[in-house]
Image (cartoon, rainbow, N blue to C red; front, side, top):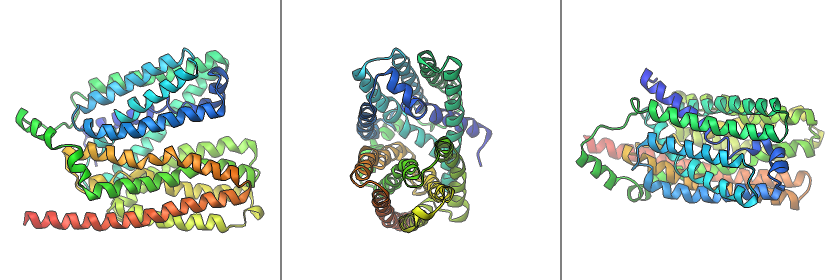
Length: 421
């Protein structure tokens, strides 16, 4: 599918996507050390994540203005290096306000400066028939890099005794990797980037026309953004499958870690290429893939609500939740691919990705709290059934939005074909 040159770029983009979020996601591998050595409560860690989500959302909006105006290798490299430098400061074990400050800045370096530009770079590697596979294999590559780096950090943590020094070494390892990838990407992409060759006049015209104005007037971009919103609102609910299995099925502690690894890493690695290949090769449309998988998700959530969980084995419960999680991860792998399918002009792709991220990731600001509050207010199985019901509502909303998206893309193609005749 890709030339050797494009495979080089793709590999660099996978490294970028798989390393930049390790520090903001420090809690995934070092939740207990964060509490102990940063002297944080559960609520304070949650506050840091909320501050990060708020800054991220604002940053995605601001990124609409800059994502198509700055050189891609520059913004990605600077964001990686800046994230690594923040990690070095984090290794000094700052106080609570320092933690909030760092996580707020992670929203700038990782999301505002990096993510929309990274998505644009992936999209530009292929035409509109290859978007599903590109994003699917990109997500798989990220999962592999995530796994290797996370387990390497845990190994370093254990090597240094599993205490204060180990935690500090783990943070410095994440920081060094981010800085290293940033430096490599800056120099390696200088000769590999697919930046369009143009004159100074055309570049000025490109800058003038790109960005917010055309993107905000594009109905297709809004539909893509809200379809991402629905996928992410459902995805947020996957976090509560572990307490669901623990509370309702009495999941043994020994299985919690194994389930978490499968749920967060294996499903990402497997779901990416499956979703991408089906979207491109079978349906030949990422938007159609989202439409059908939203239907499947809604049906599976209704089944999860109606199943006699108290009379089922824990292994059957694990299989049911993992099957549903697999469907969601295939959606996550391709939910930005419709931007390429819709034929959004190259000069506006970054702005479209930024708007899609701004709206699409917004559920992170409220869904975790909403679902958690429901579970606290409704102990036992009933609370989880209400959460599954809300997730099903978001899935049904996704069916409607992705259905409109399919019609809009088809209409746009017809108009473009008529214009070329």
